[in-house]
Length: 447
Image (cartoon, rainbow, N blue to C red):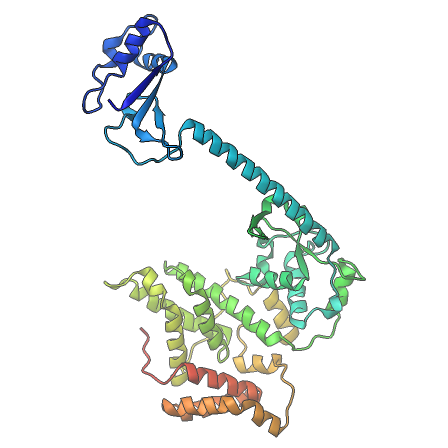
C-alpha cells in the first residue's frame, strides 16, 4: 500500500471504519464502495461519510512528495491516490505556509522600498524647474500643439498618454516622451499614486496606462498661462523643424497604413515597425504625405492578395510591407507614376501638430516634398569651397553607386529636380546619395 494512515481516534469502530474506507487493492483502487459502509451511526450520506473520515484521520500518499522537503503529501480523497511514484509538483502544507510567509515578507519589503522610491521621486518632481527661453525650437512647437490637444489641462492640471491622442494621427506618445525626456513635462506621483510605479532592479519604472503628467514650471514665471505665452511669442526658427515634420508625417502614414490593414483584414507586423517607418521616411523625402498614402494603399493591396496564396499567410505576407513599399517607391520614381490625389480619411484627423504646421508654415499632407524641404530647411548658405568640401564624400558615394548600377542619368536628373524645387545643395546630394546607395537599379514589380 502506498498510503500511510494517521488515525486521530481511539474508538475501535471508528478505527475499523477508517481502515475499511482506505483499504486499497494492488491497483490502488478502493476495495469497498462507500454505500457498503453506510449507515454509520448518525452518518447517512456518502459525502457526509467522507467528511467524517477526514475529520478523524490524516492520510499521506508516499507516491506523492513535497517539492521542497520531500515528505509524503497529505491527500483527502481516495481518487487522489497515485499508483506510481510522481514527480514532486507542489509543497506540503508546512512548506507552503513557510513559503507563503516568506513571500509575504518579501512583498512587504518590496512595497516599502517602492513607497520610499516613489517618495524620493516625488521630492525631485516638486523641485523641478525649467527655463522656457531655452526650450529647443521643435520642442516648443510640440508643446504649443499639446496645449491645443488637451486644453485647459496643461496649466495646473494632470493628464495621461491617452489624453494626448489629438496631438497626432498616431504615436502621440512619441512626442510626449520627447517633452518628458527634455524636462518640459514631468510625471507626477502625487496624481498617479504608487500603483502607477514598480521597481525594476535599481530603477523606478511606470505603467504607461496609469502615469500622469504635468507641465514643469518656469524658473521665474511658474507653470501657468503667463509662462506659456512667453513661449508662444518667441521668434520661431527652422531649427529642428524638418526632422519634426518627418516624425509627424511618418506617424500620419503609419496611421493610414494601420487603417488600410484593418480595412482589408490584414495584420500589422509589430516586429517590423521600425523597418516600415524607415521605408516611409525615405519615401517622404521625395513625395508628399498623400502620395505615400497612395504607395501604401498599393502595398496593402499586394499584401492582401499574397496572404491568400497557398504557401503564405497574413503574418508572412505582412512581414514584407517595408520591402514592398521600397519597391513601389522606386518603381513610381523610375516610371514617373501618377499617384493621384488622395484625400485625408475622416477617421484620421491631422491632429494639432498638423494644424500648427499648416498655420505657421502653410504645409500639410498635400505639399510636395521639395517645398517642405525648402520651407523648413535650417541650412545656412555656404560659399562654393565650403559646399564642395561638405558634399565631396556624398558625391563620390553617389556617382560610384549610380554608375555601378546604370542609374547615372537618373541620379543626376533627380538631383537637379530637388535643387530646382528649392532643396539645398548639400541636403539634395545627401538624399540622392542615400537613395541610390541603398537601392541599386533592378527590375521592379507590383508583387
